[in-house]
Amino acid sequence: MTTARALWCVAPGRAEVRPGTTGEGVLIETLYSGISRGTERLVLEGRVPESEHDRMRGPAMEGAFPFPVKYGYSAVGRVAEGRLSGRTVFALHPHQASFRLPEEDLTPLPDGLPPARAVLGANMETALTLLWDSGAGPGDRIAVVGAGVVGALTGYLAARLPGADVTLVDTNPARATLAQVLSFAFAEPAGAPAECDVVLHLSATAAGLETAMGCAGTEATVVEGSWYGAGTVPAALGGAFHSRRLHIVGSQVGRIPAARGPRWTYARRRAKALDLLRDAALDALISGETDLADLPDVYGTILADPATLCHRIRYDTL
Image 1: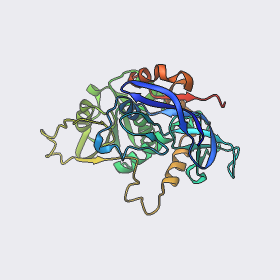
Image 2 (image 1 turned 60 degrees about the vertical axis):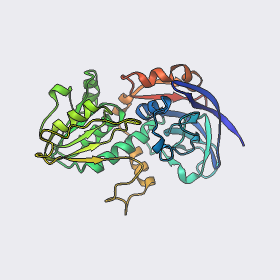
Image 3 (image 1 turned 135 degrees about the horizontal axis):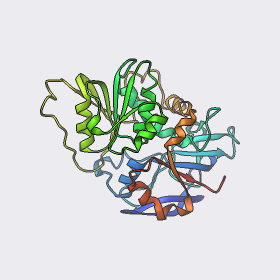
C-alpha cells in the first residue's frame, strides 16, 4: 500500500501532515486543493454530530470522526497514467499530494478553466443545487444571506437569471467589494431587502436565519443551506411567520433534487459546475494560498478568520 503526504485533523484545533493511503485507480498528482471553511472548521473543532458521522464521511476519507481524520473534498490534479494521462481533472478527495481514483470519478476541466480556479468546483456544485432547490426564476427579488464562498457563488448564479434583482447580505461591509465584482447588490442586515420572492440562508448563524426570514415576502421560500454541526439553532417561528405562510426548505449537495433526478447525474452536475467557473471574475473568491508543508501551522487561523473565502493549498508538483 503506497502513501502520500496528507493533511490530518488529529485533535481539536490541531492538524498535521501525515502519510495518507493513495487508494486504487489511476494516479493523480495534486496541483491544488481548496479549503471549505465552514465544513472543515467543524471537522477541526470536533463538532461533527455523532448522528452524522457516517453521512459526513467524504470520498477517500481516512480515519473516523472525531479524530484523527483525513478530510477535504476539492482537489485538482494532473493524471499521470491511463486514458486521461496528461489531463487536468477535478476530484472529490482530501488534501493530499497524490492519490489514486477510478477514471469514472475524475472530471476533466473544461477549456478556459484554470486549475487554480477549479478548486471552487465543489462550492459551485453546492451553489447550483441551492438555486435549484430555491425555485428562483427570472424577474424574482432574491436575497442571499451570508457572504461566504457558497453564498457568493449562489448570488452569482442567481444574478444571471433574466431580470432577477439579487442582494448579498452580510455583517462584513468589506463584502460589498466582492458583490460589486460579481455584479449584484450588497446590504448589511439593517438594510436587507424586504418582500423577497426567494431567500437563501448561508451564514450558519441564528441571527442570519432571522435576517433571512425577515427578508421573505408572503408565501416566499427560505432555503436553509447552512450546516451548523453539533447543537441546536433557534428559529424565529413566532410573529408573522405563519400569517406570511413562509416555506422553509432544507438543501444539501449530497442529493440531486427530486425534480431533476430522472435527468441529472452527479457527474453531469459536477461537469456543469466546472463549466460555470470559467468567468475570471470568480478569482475574487480566492483569499489566500499556502503550501501543504506549511499548512498545519496556519490551518486553524485560516478557518477561524471571517475574512477567509476559499483558501487554496498548493502542492510541489507544480
